[in-house]
Image (cartoon, rainbow, N blue to C red; front, side, top):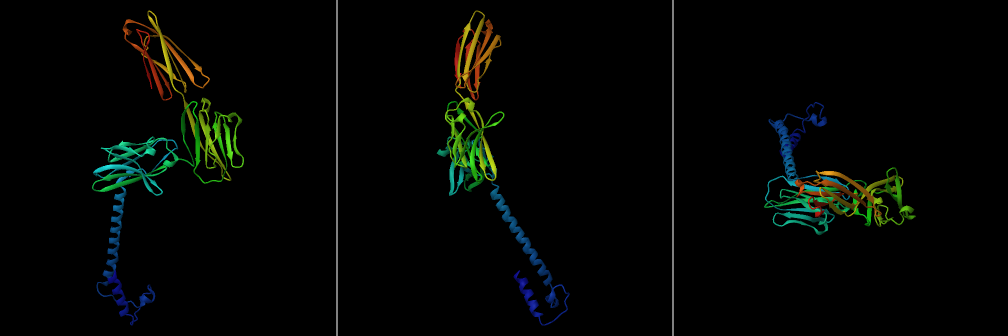
Length: 390
């Protein structure tokens, strides 16, 4: 490039005293243009072309190196989850390496914090503040995954999966957790009947909120439960005054607390952030209740028959089924709703007792939600053989 510029400068300087006719395309400069030395035109044309080729090669090389560095670890850019849900973050190292340890870190404002590590010798180590809801769920050195249960608002953010290799050092990828929606809520909260339970919503959008409203989604309508505004305070519907209250008095975060849950509290609730002039924006959260599963059984044996009965009490209403009752003559069941909201279900079977059933058993199995229990009766003895509670 410098050769070309110097040659051109000398050529123009040498001919500056001689006026030659131009072609009109280059103005005055064109008028002073004279014949170029042999090979000059070829030199002037070839040099920029070579420079362009070299620059293109250099850019291609830089791009290839950058792509290889970014592509050594494969991971999803981000994964969306609802508050209270379950999410798995996964990374894979694509290049063969001698991996010593896998580390997961969360990016923070001041740097990174270790969340979990895994080595074949030491196993999994999870930070104490995550130990009850996070685990390393893929125990390999070239592939790793962590699973969050009951995701919290503070879990949102980006995480690093770091493969510590020898002698290549660390190779890492980044993946992010995104909480869904402008209003963050737990999709479903599960609690025992009679427990104290809070449902919470967080507004993640900047709005001029003037009032917060909680409603219950009934079969045909939305029932107003309570409202909060800075000027008027909390107002709870008289039907629920001794049963619940708004316990987080803020315009961008809100919570209602049930003092003692009953089965009528099951269902879905809506939190509404009423803003001006945008209107209302809301989120939905649901409450599911369960009770302990209690089970009993008894049987009466006659000469050729066995009458076995089993009962279970819980919420949701238990489902009963008999196993091994091929010789059933009659059966029946009934249900009772208790004052505390639980349901008692009873079932009986009448069996023909033959010699072939001398060592047989009949089993009553109860299920309520995720809870199960079973009671068995030995046919030839007619009394409970064992009990198995889950």
